[in-house]
Image (cartoon, rainbow, N blue to C red; front, side, top):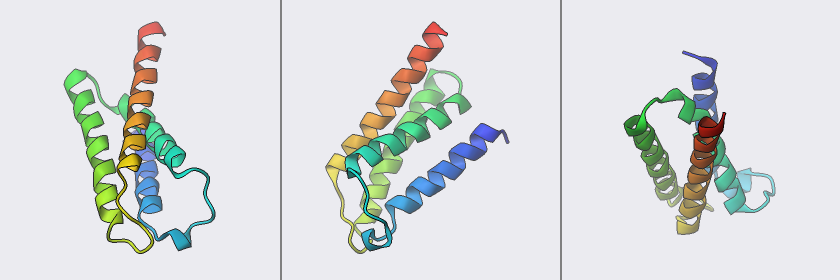
Length: 109
């Protein structure tokens, strides 16, 4: 397993853990939507180099979006947390942003 895969896996675990702990366990945080956007953008940027071809790329992006939705569903079971469609929108925006940057980098590098 390469370093990028290990880093992507570790970041995914940290992202999920951070999203599924009660709010009272966390320090005061900046804008929640910005954190969702940045977290999923970074995860997408780490994960995209692990796949090759359009079909695996689309499957990965859909999986990241589904994972964000699942996190929101699970947050409804965590004290001080709730399901939020805007968080899913921020996740999706982060995924699209990182995928777009990756595409542009590959096209012009």
